[in-house]
Amino acid sequence: MNLAIHTQNLGRIYKIRGGKKTEPKELEALRDVDLEIPRGELFGLLGPNGAGKTTLIKILTTLLAPTSGRAWVTGFDVTKDSHKVRARINMVSGGEASGYGLLTVRENLWMFSQFYGIPSKEANRRIKQLMEVVGLGDRLNTKSSDLSTGLRQKMNIVRGFMTNPEVLFLDEPTLGLDVGASRDVRRFIRQWIDEDHFRTLLLTTHYMVEADELCDRVAIINEGRVLACDTPANLKRRLQQDAIFKMEVSPLNGLNVDSFEGLPGVRKAIHVPKDGTAELDLILEKDDALGGVVNMMTSNDVHILNLHKREPTLEDVFVDLVGRSMEEVEAGEE
Amino acid sequence: MKSEQWTVDSNQWAVEKNSGLKFFLQTVIARAYPRIIGQQREKSWMFFDIFLPLLAVSAYVFVYRAIGAPEEYVGFVVMGGAMTAFWMNVLWSMSSQLYWEKEMGNLALYIMAPNSMMAILLGMALGGMVATLLRALAITLLGSWIFDIPYAVVSFGQLFLVFMLAMVALYGMGMLFASLFLLLSREAWHLSNLAQEPVYLFSGFYFPIKSFNFWVAMSASIIPLTLGLDAMRQLVFPSGAALGFLSIPVEMGILSGLCVVFLTAAKLLLAYMEKLAIREGRLTESRR
Image (cartoon, rainbow over all chains, first blue to last red; front, side, top):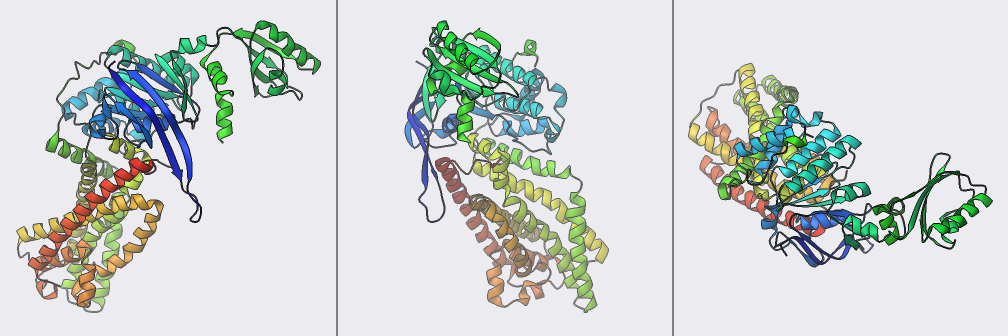
């Protein structure tokens, strides 16, 4: 198979220095990651903050050396042939403030294009063309310090795409963007990959909808390990036999997720407190198990305000694999 | 975004990319661009980089005239004041540049691109040098006009050569400091503060370095501006040669040595910094 990205037992351990007298601590950010991503695929890495997504991207973009295992991008070893890898890739991170505020958008983009050896005339042609595509054609001569977060991220997106890389890495590309700008960026990404089957894109995100909507395949990653890797549809199919309910209820009056998970037929419960109410997501083995949940609520004077059954999402897959929601994992990190 | 306008395809973009020396020079020019063009856009530089240094120069001129010092000293002060701009640029801008690039998120992009990091660093140096040249020239012209400085240039060719050697050695030192300051992170600020005033004194910015004991002046010659300034003064002022520290050929020889030492050390330290950055993963990470 013609692989764009290939990793074997890839691992990374960070040494975190303590005080002068204390030994450095070790933090395992990646463990035994095996991935095979063919050319032409839009591949998603889905996981909470601190799961190891950025560490993996840094290794694949030659910015960080692995402490175990190996990785190849476009057939070249990322540690031994880093220069060959660099000529074929690019990366855009969400929320990055790269470039210089005193330069205009066109000047910043031109500067970065020169670091890839693109002749100046061709670079200016690409910049103009891509800026039109992302709807920033009239902002070419605006100082980049005068751009809003959303417009700046679009400029960053152009920076990544203008070198026409074989493999593009997008690290949380819609981080901090409003709904409209995020939708625009997602559409742009999908079109870019569909337009040429030689292109490959690896995207990290902790937005489930983004991974579901965009990616051909998704790897769910947590605590440095890949827990599952498949198409979004196949991942969700794992839970097809389960019954998934979303409830809006009054405050739980002393009940908690353990109370519900102790009931027969309840596989998982996620509780999200809201202002004066609460949201409860339930993964049940069968619809019948809902009766026990309702009875427990009634006997504890908890009122059901809204209830509906829904299709499984990647969030449910994550909960099923990790045992906690992504929000709970991130809260635990803090 | 306008999806209907999406016409970018790889065939259309199949162009020969530059490589080798052409690519190296292309990178140098691109990285110099923000400093040469961008820095001129904030007009406040005229106040901070020309008017304020001229005030410092004026103070020394009035002191020298008040005590009846030889008139050549006034010229020495103006030239020293102009060259101060380069020292300030190297100390506060060039040296901390990689650190700021890291904080802005540019350093990772520079390392990840297929260009040479040495070309990036050279671009920073070239940009800083050209931008500062404009400030130094303004101080020289204004100072010479206000204080009516007499010049008697012995050799324009030698003057240009000495200036270029001093600049290459000085910015080579700045390139070395850039990697060093990145490794030292925020502690580097203290080093800059520590170095600023002593170098003003020991490099003889406002008086001839010959006034010092030979070994003090020789030690101060590690800073390229010390000998650069001394040789330039010998070449442009009527009695400059009499107040010079070493002969011009000797000073040019030492400056050439400093160029080789600083540029080689800068290249080695940059390669070490890049290796360390990739091994540890810390140096390219911004704190934001």
